[in-house]
Image (tube, rainbow, N blue to C red; front, side):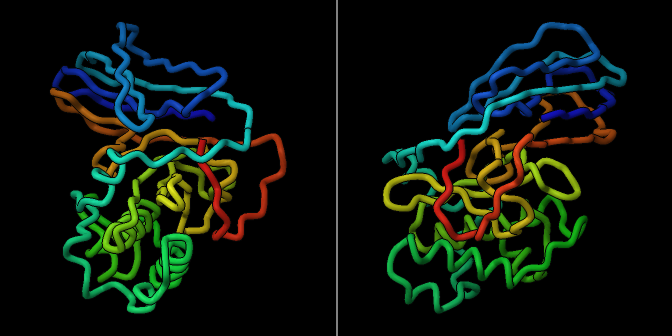
Length: 257
């Protein structure tokens, strides 16, 4: 994985950078300003480095390598159930009842419901780059009928939670994604374990690498100010694999490392 982005700090202050791949074998994060960073470990596998950035333009680069493995699915805890069945900022599962397809309610259990709702979202929404606003939640996306990966994931998480299936939003590196960028998917609790799904079907899940995990996009920004102000000037992301990309039918149970 290779990431590069530029920012312009207009008001000095701390900024949190969350681009680290989970369980990387080797990695290096550099900021053109050479001050020290403070590592921060959030819940559910999200890591950040906090830099106190002075005013001016700064360049951030990240490189990591990791051997692909077939990870064991992570167990779902009682705390997970408590957190990831509740409505959240972009996933208002308590207000979506009128937009839930009736056929989902007739299916028995998460093992059948989750692949069915992923198919429904894939067919219901059109992937249109630049079509959504940062403030759009899952209901906005369903009404618009289009969105980007972030929006597809929010809709799926919302439908899962409406069905009382714990679901969480995940930022990933996704080899095979075109055009290449950070990517958003979601994990759902099936038979007591977390499995990853992607309603966009834009990249195989088997080669995805976790960056951040949370209730929705509000918990998983790759760059956030913690005081101060900055302008984002653009980024490039490359995620590749030496092996051939696997074929993903979209429905098989795949665990995310």
